[in-house]
Image (cartoon, rainbow, N blue to C red):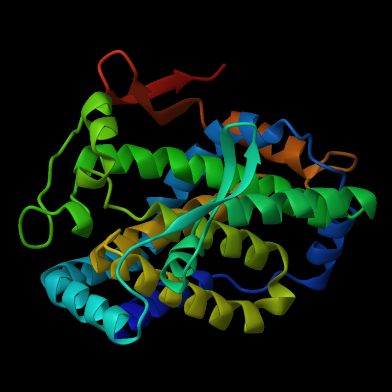
Length: 327
């Protein structure tokens, strides 16, 4: 457990402390800027994906990726020991090693919402996508009601980052095809590269361990908040480190993930959470009368005529790489 928490904290703090706090003038401009259109949650996904990939391959990103790959390799070596140790802790602390859910909201015979019924389940639920979606929707509502552009746009960016990160998370899961601890057939889980969509859906636990989508969504949520409200980061950084550490423990305890699934999940969450914010924030004030979103799209159109995006061929179940030409 200690090794997992320290790894999560180190990776997260390395990334999030990489940028200096924007000046007060930028934060004020964000508060006053016009609301982004709601449809940007979906229509900005290609631009967010491209910006995230472009930022990931900059020279100054290399130390971060070295840390991610290095910690993944170290954790992989000890994955089996970490799994056994944490699950023993779970039993010793009377948490159990399984997730038990109960229906919380039904419409007719359809269960709309299920919630955990024990502590082990709640630790796992801390990474459920319902949490950042609820936070995003709440920011949209409060931002709109209070005419607060920064709050409203933070909700837009969070949703955009979550959707973009989910696409890459699913693509990598299909590429790696790693067994989860609950379904592993050999030490540290077997790998089934390039798993087809049909095979993946037939027994998801055998193919979806790497990387952790729960860790990714939690990181997107915190990254977007930290990038938009850096004045609170003295509190947000330790809060996130503890949140990811507890979530990481909880998922290993119930056999959903290995410890080495986490660093890449953190990286994806940070990369696409930050890209969703930078997509329009970086051009505030570029042109008089031009919104931040329009400014970024103008610059993106000038600098990136080709875009390379992941995809999924539903007829064959194979992942694809798509090249789009902008004019």
